[in-house]
Length: 167
Image (tube, rainbow, N blue to C red):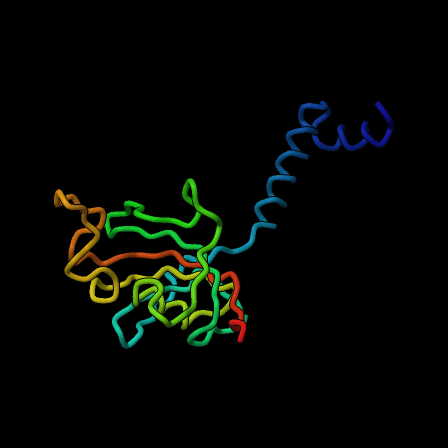
């Protein structure tokens, strides 16, 4: 053992095992001290006049789309029980949905939400049935429904890009 290790070892208790315990506990304390403080505060819930409620889960300071702009969004759609009914990252789909914002290409609630976002921002939005599939839902001929009539929907939405459409 080198003289510096002997000196440290003897000051702590004499054995390498004691030295290791000392170094490990000191390292653990510095690890705990280096951890960032995590806020337990609930996110702010915003209300749009139409009845959409949303929380910003990732903030951004990008461009805000205007009606008619081409937008690219990634999203996951959930029923209020947590069941996923659609997502841009599901099998057989590309990574983003492209559409002209504010022109009725998607459900009204998603259209409105995107027009209130900034590029790079991610939100979780609660969309009332009146701005989703209303009293019709999404049902097949035998009466089985993927989305029951009158269902409130939850969307996680990331606005990836926004651009002015070509003339």
